[in-house]
Image 1 (cartoon, one colour):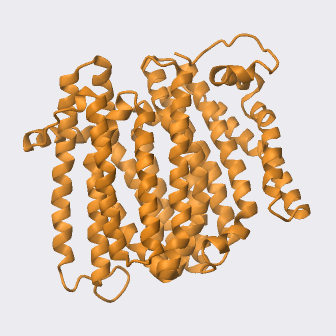
Image 2: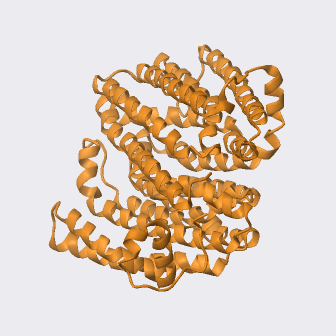
Image 3: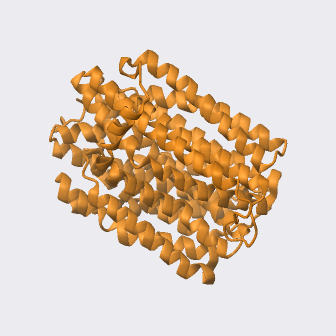
Length: 517
């Protein structure tokens, strides 16, 4: 808490960047190994199984976010006893929930005629093992995740992220090795379960050594009953999680009406387009607590500046990433998928546009969630996901995977992009026209990048286009940010995060407001 905004930001950005690299490696490197081990049909079936299992994450009920906020309050108050009590209640409640659901799943997997979703046949032994092991792994992560929120609640976000990513890198090597020797899906799922235990051990050990309130945590029915009392506050966080699960996995279930190959095609294109989210996520981790601090201090002008600045940065970064992906996707995709799947450029275009727009409205939504003004946001997000699924169901038979992508883009525009800035204006005293103007100027500012990318693709048809585009993008970044944020706001932001660079830019006088505290 004693660190300045600049120190917290740079530490958080460094650890968050490492997290995005690890996430990208998991998303990209494992796909060709999946296809090599099981083929397109086997990989599509794996995606269907894991899509069904992913809905178990809804049993979190928003507890991690809500309990983490409660722990942060007690940490500020320096009430170690209450901190430990809340943490014990949360861990106990989700431990018993996880155990109960795990027993139910094991029982269901013993039923001999349990059908496989979308097919008129019983599940095979290997499919039952996948569901059992992957479900257990996911259920273990719930109480462990509540325990790990102590990092964020005590100002150790960067440390917790670094430890978690180090373990995930180790587990990535294990997963790659299992797929390289072409183990069955059931054995691979058992390996994932083992990785869950390996990841939890160092985190628990470190928390107990770094945070006194994490020591002597008790797990009991008494504490579990206390944990039930926190559910009313976490409901709306749960709705946001529900919406995310529907939008991410529900569309894959809709695509089962076509074929497992269609599922794999959409999933791989969405994975590539999903690289854009790493730009926003890079900023979200360190900026989330800053929004909370500004809201608690009623520093509305500073909050508006931070919302506008982060929105502009997220959209510019996501736009440049989208253009880069679009240029090189046709060359990389066949190699990445081992020519098991074909390139679908219209689908990729729709998904990339959706990702750039999402960088705008989702960044604005952080301020609402960080200030606990997320009730209407949660309902709106759920409506967005439901509309997306209905739209996908209507379009999938005519345009297959492309129809699903179009449904997602239209629902995002109608239910999120046009409404969330208005919600932020209503609850946080943020200027909605200024937010909309930032989003519009961000899209307009990306036009020179598009022109350069088109020219490079025409006149420089080789891998040399990548460094050439990177150099041009670097030169255009500062003037584009001045277009999006304005010259004064751009300089002020640079004064905050990197004074050693901003001193070489033209002086515009002292900043009227600051987020350094």
